[in-house]
Length: 239
Image: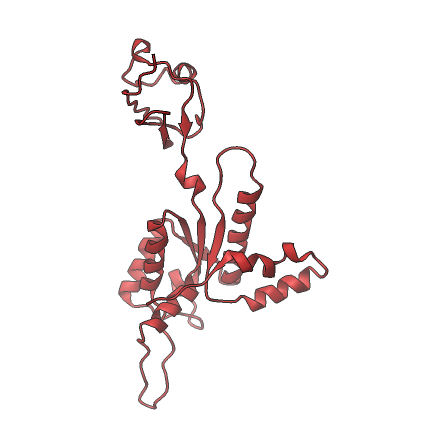
């Protein structure tokens, strides 16, 4: 008989939530996405699952709803977002000579955008120049407040920050990361579905488009960076 009242906790890492065709959920290793339960027991009999074969209901198939694999990836142009937040907050001060001080990028703006997309069940990676973390490049050093630096280090420790080397273009890192993940999502045929990827930036990436056009003269429009950005770039506003 089919008994949907049992809930099994297979504590074998890595764990994902798997749901039988009934209403209850159980936890199974990610690699066991679709498996006869008896086969699963035989392969993992050295683990103590706390259940015996006589207790096992007849279950033909167990399927994994791998939400994280399906979630879209948002690759954030961190510098663009941080400067935009500062601009939106109208925090630029006037110097004694009547001029404007350079904008101070706000890591809080990155945090606001990050939380917005995490609440929307997206994966998020923030691309920033490496010197934002080390603050060792006096010629390009953003003036971060102590609180902003602490927040940035916290986001980095949580795995959200991707640091572009100081000799490289952080915009290029963001674009390549998003385009590769998007291509992987569209071409993947086996295993769980992978969510599409987008780059979050108000930058129109004109320099990157020109480099791409110059490097690939005569290439089909559909394969160009210009074409991908039409649907792959997300613009935003703080209000």
